[in-house]
Length: 155
Image (tube, rainbow, N blue to C red; front, side, top):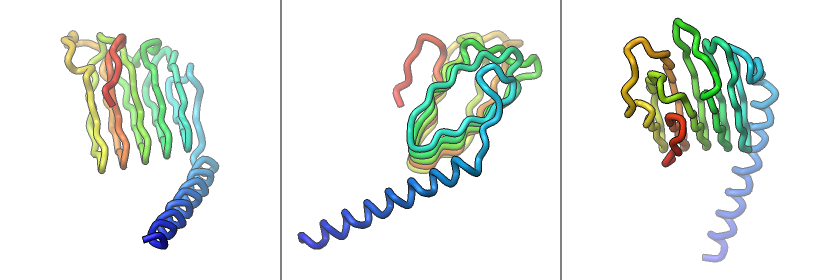
């Protein structure tokens, strides 16, 4: 029994080291684009957490990639382009929480393996011509939560 424990420990440490190396390589290969004022952005978070507050004047698209970590993405100070906006989220062993204004129409689609997605922002009635945000999420061992302003996620 003792040797089985040490085999497990060795494999766990090896897995962690390999995962950290892969995260560092990914961080170098996947560039970030734009900043918090940009209407188009790409943000990468590996092995840690990050807060991002968008103040875009005409938000059109954003990409968030997380690995072994998470991101809080606050869109309550952003303005959506009149044609709408599209977000792409890729999370592996992590999560993304997105806060949006209550008056936005938010559509969340995608798939999750050993994780889940939640969109509580849809509980609120919004005008037919409300700003529209489409979110496409791909999640492995993690989660995505979309909440309206002044709400907190349960994920």
